[in-house]
Length: 257
Image (cartoon, rainbow, N blue to C red):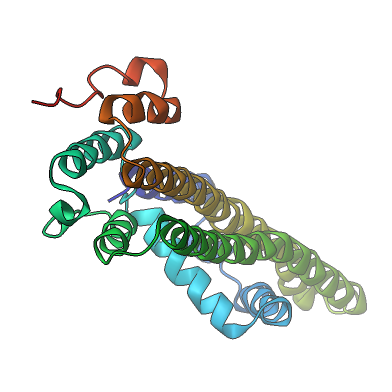
């Protein structure tokens, strides 16, 4: 689990709630018409911009990206690639037949190699898989950035609605308060949704997409060199460019017997 996402979300909500409670109650900041305008309007704009399937997929991917931390460390992948290269040098590609790994992309690459496909086809299949993954993340990121852009704008629209209602009811002092509440709180709701939920999730999706893409490029490079019969230590040196210099210690595989 990605605990930092949960900590950040809880901390942000608590800070806002504590600020609200300083001189008022939470009910003071609850306005159902304002919420309906912001949430309903933002949802409507999102449906106009994107397909429903894309929106649902974006929310599923965001929950997975935000609250789970399944991205493998490049150092672990490099060590595993070095071990695979040693096996292939000693036993051939079929020596990987019973190898199981927790990385789905690497497992697919191994299966393609064991099935006897030519290197060009293996690399093309992996590249297509990587591209599809990147596109899914990109669409999900666009959905949440769209929500982040729409929510404040819809909030401002609600503010204008509230101001018009207030100006239209100046002869009735009892209606000025509710109209002003709509005017002010819709802006608050829009900013809250955008700055505390939608835009941070979009950034998290971008970060996870970059991590996944880097790892998949690393795996594709590894498989290419393994199928060429590259020396494991030479291959590890090539792959070390994917990590920082201080992480390169101990990456080289054991020398061949």
